[in-house]
Length: 261
Image 1 (spheres, one colour):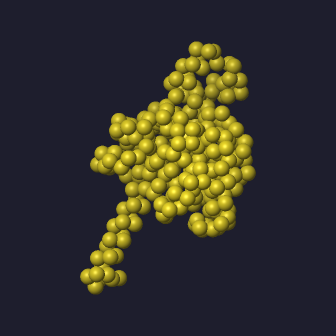
Image 2 (cartoon, rainbow, N blue to C red):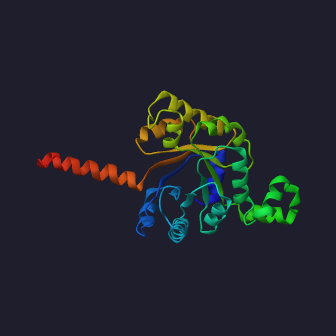
Image 3 (cartoon, helix red, strand yellow):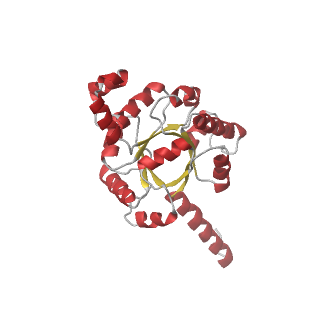
């Protein structure tokens, strides 16, 4: 899948499947290619991946038909452009809470490589772009999926206005930060948390915008949210899978062999 198909599926409601890949190991892409994923989520907000490593990761996954979707470190238009220049086919903007933030970030994705005053003018007055310029920029950025993290109460309060912005492909719930903002840290089975997730997903899908959540605790919950309309599915991560699988196996061996801690 490429970024263009990813965008189409997010808007149409078709589910797209991915996982978070945090390791820059060159061994990973070929292994991941066997897993039937549509995209990979590469996080540079919380994970120390440098620009050179990131570009190699993006190019490798893209060559294998897996769309690389990168969360940039902060809501910064220059980071968005730089990430697409490096080979990403989608970006996720962290901790978005306002319409102004989204408009500026979308401009960075949709009007790239325009920056500075020229970009600001195009945001305020799209008619300032000639037909030739508009057609060029639309084609140049057609593969760029644009996704924002919704992970706070202020973001939920402004969600309707955010979803009405043209050019938004999907919203992705950040469960950890959202749970803290709701006053129920890491209580992912709390009714209030589940209600917030369903509200975000339902509002997004009502506007033909993709909606989903990055979740790692159990696949049954991911399935339940998908049945309620979530179609941007990011399940677990390489680190989480390693920890859960290897940890469980070592614990089992210790118990059987009488070496339990």
